[in-house]
Image 1: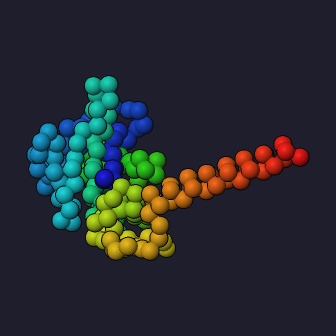
Image 2 (image 1 turned 90 degrees about the vertical axis):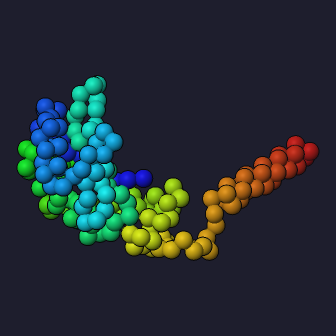
Length: 179
């Protein structure tokens, strides 16, 4: 899993010049890689790919790895905003559904942390939690068992509860019919 940011037209729905963005990214150290670019931000590799809709490039997608920490995300926002300004476009965060400004670095960092926790807890990418150091109440930072019930156990208990409930209701129904 990754966290996505978009470089897109500064006017919603307006024309987007992917070549201007590409030139700025190359000038900032991005390198050609498999049909896109690879850009190093604070030692983390960010994948850069065109976002195509209807055969037209509508944005440039920055695929940010989830293993970075809070400062990495804040630096990523600052770097993305610098690229956007130089390329004459805007930086947009589809997770929080708005164009970004320097004041949004904290909001992006919070959403990034939620995404990293989700990836670690639900998608099985537990290395994300430990390396990023994200912890919130109820979210362990290591892959050690938390002592809570696993997903399969919860499903089993729910099924057992429903069966028991059915048996009780069925028994009561039969008892009422006899009288």
